[in-house]
Image (cartoon, rainbow, N blue to C red):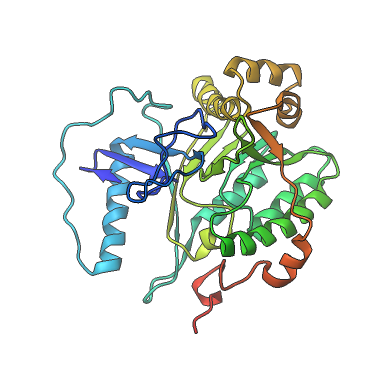
Length: 336
């Protein structure tokens, strides 16, 4: 969403029903109900970004490009106006360059754009100590293979992935759940040094919290939030947009603290502990993300290690990495 090219939002939140929640992620909440049927839905975890300045103008231009591709109509850019910023929203960074990465499928003579996939692979390649990822899916073989290669290294990074327990909709859950089981096996077989974890969050009474967020934190050097997931569609078939900020100066401790602070804030939310507890435990564990999380997991609201269902092998044979439901590009999708 772009407002007058002065304020823009980009992230995982869809403008649809069944998306409201608070960071408390209670098992039940009277306000979590659909507007028409009034049927209640479960806890929901999501993240978006707000940007101003040149980043907002760039997203406005991207929105107009997409509108023109879809309708043939070119919208005029708004006249420059006063800056807009919500009073209660504290920025993570000020006057910081923001990178936009895109996925655009091949369409009516337009070449596909795979910037998002390229950035994922480069982030995995460059990570020194840790990768923290929140994603709706874990179903991209290229991403999993890149992770496996780093996990085989004796001094590679720790990798923590936060997923929902299962995808929405039975068919999506079957197809992408099968792919996750297969890729999880691939990654765990490469994890010779016990540096990989895939967790799912649960509420106080054990209700699964649905993870719709798309976040990557690389060490204390890069923060990425957007619409893309770790699945094939997000790499070359869907239309996606991610935003990133990166430390490019070793003398910028404030931005480094903001990046790692956001990651720790998310962990504190999932583990139901104060931020200071997460930070202290990380220090006690010599910065090990995996050991700190494992030591803080408890009863009630927490992070639970994910294990595929006992019938996952059958599902994999039938649905694993199915090009019809999770194609890597337009050319690989089923066309009739």
